[in-house]
Length: 309
Image 1 (cartoon, helix red, strand yellow):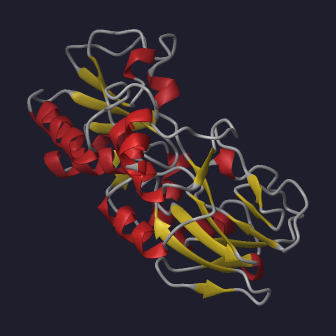
Image 2 (spheres, rainbow, N blue to C red):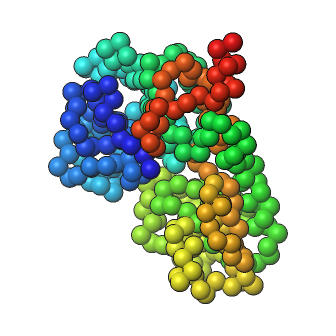
Image 3 (spheres, rainbow, N blue to C red):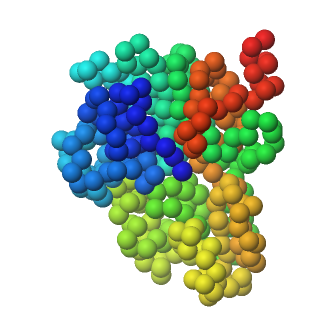
């Protein structure tokens, strides 16, 4: 869940609903909860990554003249005096964080993100912010170890080891329409075969320019299905532990009822607790607002004492 915002009463980010001073919408990534209110009658200019712009044009039929794709790291200046920079968010393909400067205010808007060294370097270059809107999906200010799932690279390596140990079973992987591509790529590389996805989803991967997908089940043992499909027991009664293994990549491994042949792997495209604490240490002493609740985020007490000291 994410809240779109009218930032500083001036411009919109991740929502098309509401009034704003400037005719721009900044879209951090192409997930439906960040496109609230998008309609064919939209007349605002949409600023995003080039990949997100391609999705908006090919899937939602947004006219080219309303799309303003920008490259990361550069400082862009709009005619009204609003300047901004973007950084890849390590979330789904095409996702960005945005840093804004307008009328003396400096604002950071993360959208959904998974903190990494690249983001840290970019944030340090931006300097201090007046206000930060942040994705705190798995942050727990008073509990160090909770929600501390492993780094992506470590999880991908464990998935590769797992699939190589299972012989010739068909491998069913839970995915989203956009997202979890790193998992699919890791398994595809390990087994040297493409990934099957239903025909209606192929177009999303073609827009990304990815070439390791197929809509022909006969070409592969790797199959990508929506997580909701693979975890619905009514729809998956034909799954056999002798012939199949099912990988559900999610940080919410505790949420699902355990089933034989199912592997719930703590892969996430959001920050874990430690990563978000690192993020907070960099943006301190900014006021930080949760994109999940709309409320102020507390710095962890022991971190706050250290930063103040």
